[in-house]
Image 1 (tube, rainbow, N blue to C red):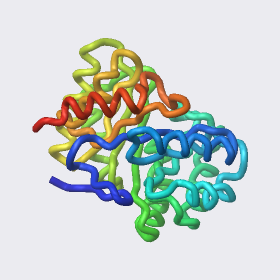
Image 2: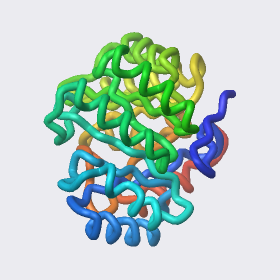
Image 3: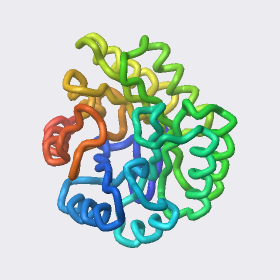
Length: 246
């Protein structure tokens, strides 16, 4: 089975890694969140730059000085994908390219909806700078059909994603099962993925990854960054209880 390395972490082996998002609006708030995360059972951090009010390019070196050995995912989530950044995809791609020039982060999240003309140069630059790529797609309205999600995850892998990521909204328990089935099939076909069913109905997907191929789960630190996130302590306890052979 293919393994993916992000910093000191190997994805695709062991229990899913716990990622805590950082959603502070300035450097002091981000550093306070990081220090709080160090006391949590977190494996890596995600900096949600769309919550940040200052220049992320200027802030990145300062943030990385404080993160210790924790790998950092740099994420700029646009309004198209449920985030706060009101940017055209052209401006989005330009900012991510500038962030990659700094080469401080261990991984970068790129939205699939930005299109291949934006994605391909960013993936190349990330690979050239030894930055892992997470390609992501979000649907806050529904859960697509299983094979549509599998094909989406496989397309991400074809575009160079180290970790393809999909997050969808369930309308029923059957939708949650559909997401888990898609995650399991994609894991077999293209290696470790990140697959999340959001909201209250989807909470089981955040702790069942070791059985269904999802290699990372997102847990709330100071605040949640998506519907249905559990606390890092709760997720860690459940993952340990479920850590028998899948």
